Length: 313
Image (cartoon, rainbow, N blue to C red; front, side, top):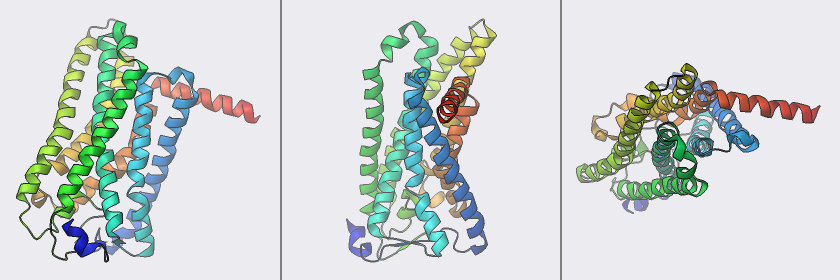
């Protein structure tokens, strides 16, 4: 790779908000609190989904995958950011940058696909309830989860190779908190338009196609829910689907803003804030959204806590 020849020995300098030192302490506090809540929330969902037999359903199988993904997603960037702020040192090795880029892209792409799969699960549950058990069988769920992880990883390797093969002529200052495609492309001393076009095509595949499938699924779901006569049934359907739509809106809205426009047109500081939102804030909010808006999850938490209390007693 062209970048490796220049940077393997020196690494990169992550500028972040280096021109605003007064932001370092507030950023440190926000990152630490967000990461703590992300770990606690996602681990709680994983544990409850495993311990409570009533949650052994496709919906919570995919939700557990989402929790694992979000936990890894933030761990790929936040610990290094916290360490750099504490040490007042903003460097990252070339290998660390490559690993961070590949992992961050892989998990982001996987989340796009997984959210589409989760919308399909809700579509079958509400619009084809008599076929739900047959359609969403264990093997099918495993295949869909594996497809999401493998496809996301493959697209990540492709996008990373395209980005890292651009020459940067010794430029080492990445104007970001971590190694991300738009910030790395700005280091290039060559014409990035061909690469931007290829990356744009990949982004369309991984962003717009899942969003389109999600919108189609929820169009059918909305029609089916409105036909439900029971207000309790409508409320339960809107509860589970509403949680998913909030997560979809938060994640896809910010990622589409970041990746479906040329890096040169992205505002420097605004791009950093958007990246912080979908890379750190959204994974923290996901467990809160799914637990507070989901009656089954709240009841499962209570059952697990009750059993734990009785055992300790």
